[in-house]
Length: 194
Image (cartoon, rainbow, N blue to C red; front, side, top):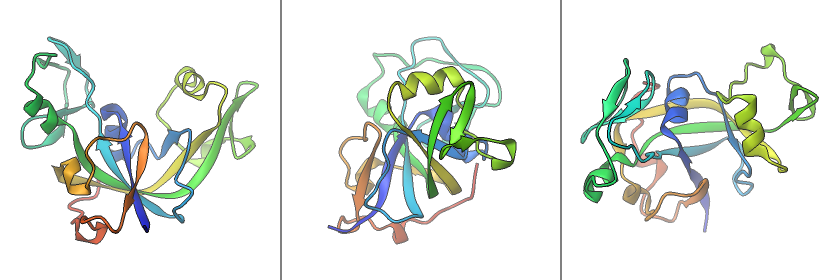
């Protein structure tokens, strides 16, 4: 089995940051060591469970039946636990692809961000779009790797998981095999960024 790409689950807030060019480092506790760099990661945009009258803040991703779009003003979503499964399933889609060209070891020590053991500077141009508190909570006692994003493509028409021969989205990420019926060369990358 030849591994050619990965499928990665990313929350809507962070997917939006990536496809708007604000976030260029995705944080993970592992990385696909079986793939050479650079590699493609198809982005499955998870759907948090909205409650009735939940407020979606400016810049968050919002879905309707046919498309994904960014909210340009705060608005109220009326999706709750009683929303039919077939509607929820349409909300959970592969929304784009990123190219990962570097894997960085990220840490926080003595009040400083460290990348591969050295202090992070503004010149590094790395943006995780998480707070120190969020990073430390995610890190716990483990190692955190930054998947450096060198390029990204947003799909105008999101794709269902079935197109990638996947029944369930990964908890974090999973390999996609070239022997599966999908083929990365057959997926037309429709636009760069949102």
